[in-house]
Image 1 (spheres, helix red, strand yellow):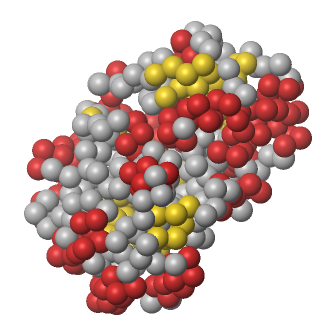
Image 2 (cartoon, rainbow, N blue to C red):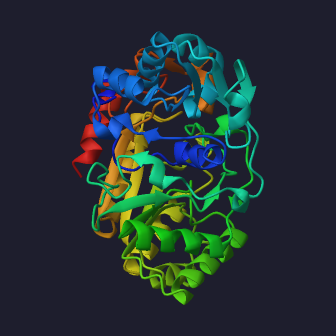
Length: 407
């Protein structure tokens, strides 16, 4: 919970557990509680479990919420309840997670196709990849407390329209960024939902929940491949043809001067996309290569300018403390941020964290060029150094993060 990491994780409703709820409701009575958004005390968690009296409790955990997952699991076990855990952190460190939570079962990977099995299984079970996303029911938003359109969820910055919620239009990312923990789910081809079902879900969000803003929470929506761009255009056209006048769409995007085209941005604008979050990371060609970003400084320059010129708001992500990154490399990032400042509406500068499951985590475990000096996951919120590298000290990393944020 927020007292564990110092941050209240209440921007958006948790989608993964809602997909599981949609599967389980076919044969079971299901309720979903987001204790973080509700700012529930530990005593409140215990009281809620006694009141609801569930046979099984399923908990999802990321790195930032890992310590909270442990506490909730132990509260449930103290009440003699069966506990199943899953999510990115569990997938990255299944044995450790199972031991520290004292859970009965840990699911590694995607859980929808094995969740029924997990209700009764013991130990670690391997999830199964959903090949056709259209086979999944829509997330069980009606089972969630607090309600998806409540003030408990504040939405992602910039918070222009409310209420806001999140959707997934696709799953998977073929790219190999060393800092990303998504490889814990296996190197995945990107699986795309059909435009008609995406539009159906948007229509439900509008009519049932009065949602004004939707954050398309795919790994990347732009700059992926020609086929991916063509699919995005089809989705946007479907939204326009159906007359779904959602007030505000936003997404994450990849910088690519070949793939972020005027046709793509025109289609997105017509569908009411108004905001793109771009993963830039560094202004150093050497660092971009070292972290296997697969983009160039010219890709960054082009995409930031092109998106802004089309009229969309631009949010850029940058990182400090990367592999092979020296003070001279961060100075290149500083120069690029200053150059692009007129085209950026928002920016975020974070400190590289070797998230479990990432390639950087593997390097750190072998003490290869990256040294983790703080394994207290309460501090792993990307604004406090938890590593030193062969190229920068802890203090240099912290100082440069603060310096870049002031630009």
